[in-house]
Image 1 (tube, one colour):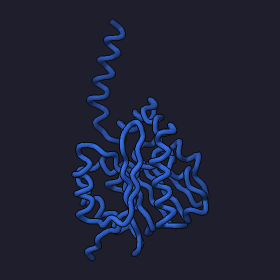
Image 2: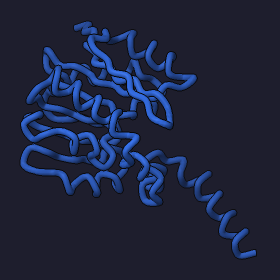
Image 3: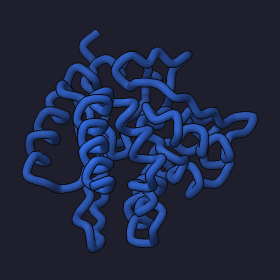
Image 4: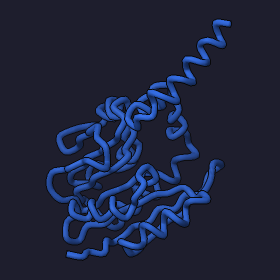
Length: 200
């Protein structure tokens, strides 16, 4: 009976309180749901993003949206970027990412839809995070204002039924200039380097 009561409370907690996105992600990181991202099958996907950053934005100023526990930054050498700002909605993830902060590396808990970063970036990376907003066109147009004149987006997305729709929306406001596809036992990932179509 006690086990049943606990399960009912947990279901209520998930269904009611966790409707708040930040609370949901904090809960998932706290209970270890995303530990699997540290496993070896994920390395190819992260290395692909790191490789594209080195190729197209060497020693640049980088903003990573959906940084989690700093897994991408850990795969780069200090000389691969001039400055790094990692942002995630989960305070739990950001607390863990702080272990990798330094003089030119900062981590911040914030919502990508309301974030107002300082200055311009040479690359803005959406690490498996662009799914989390209802309007990707609006989001990318907003973040175009935070790119330097030659700045680029790097977006990584897992292939799914909705994947073609996501890329169709993204390509409405960007042009793909490079891409890498990786696979693991969980699926296929496409990572693209994108030049924004500026309207101003």
